Image: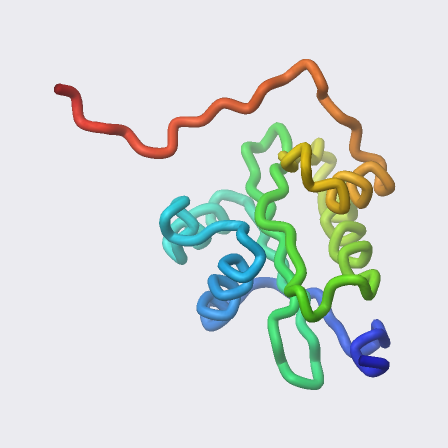
Length: 151
């Protein structure tokens, strides 16, 4: 465990299509998504072509994807999605490194940075508040995930 605590063993880099299987496994392990939610390689590539950014936190000794952060861009603001760390790497302060990198990208692009977090995810909410995010308590999140054919 001591080796995993050394931040010099990690890099934050851009997503590569060869990362997709590892990313998909991380999302499944952390309950963040998958193809059922529309999180396909094709969608990732489309958001990257549209000015988005997909960050990989890599544990260098094993060349292992330890975390992800997906930034989509509507050219008014960035949306932070699928921010997560594999359970075996949690509690080491790595989420701070990844969060700081996302904020840096927002600053460089001069775009607001917005995210959604479940109200029961106290750990994540504390992280985001610590890094300057503010709650928009007067908003509710609504979504249409699947369009059913008209009857």
